[in-house]
Image (cartoon, rainbow, N blue to C red; front, side):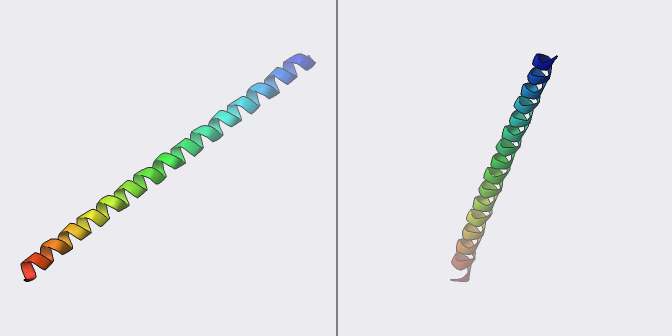
Length: 57
């Protein structure tokens, strides 16, 4: 009985660790996507400003 309880506890711990790792990976991916989107927006704004400067002169 004790061995079964220990095995169940180990399995639960492994599942929790896997879930935490998956959550961390998802958070990292979301952060990377947000950073990429921000960089793209900045590039677009810079290009638009450059185009506006060219049109003004």
